[in-house]
View 1 (cartoon, rainbow, N blue to C red):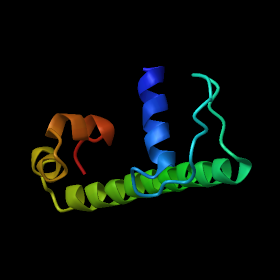
View 2: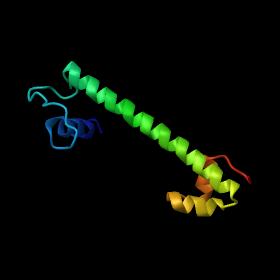
View 3: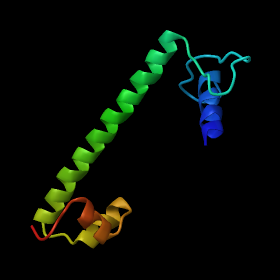
View 4: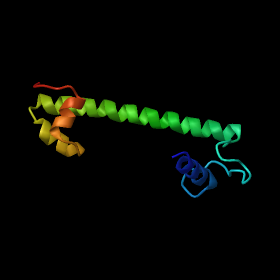
Length: 98
């Protein structure tokens, strides 16, 4: 798993994927991956952005599910629109009847 993660990071910073931030030194031993400080800040900033986006999406989902349940839509119908089963959606949102 660590090797896979290292390959993913190497691809990301070498320019093979959008958003690449730096070239890795070729003599860097496995497990000793280091990035220049500015690149590390870019990576950490992107992680923070990803977390904010995930939290925002979760908040919008809660809002939409609450609104749909208030309109008496079934858990199955709501779950279908999210690619989930009604039961898993009901458990996720702790719901009973509105």
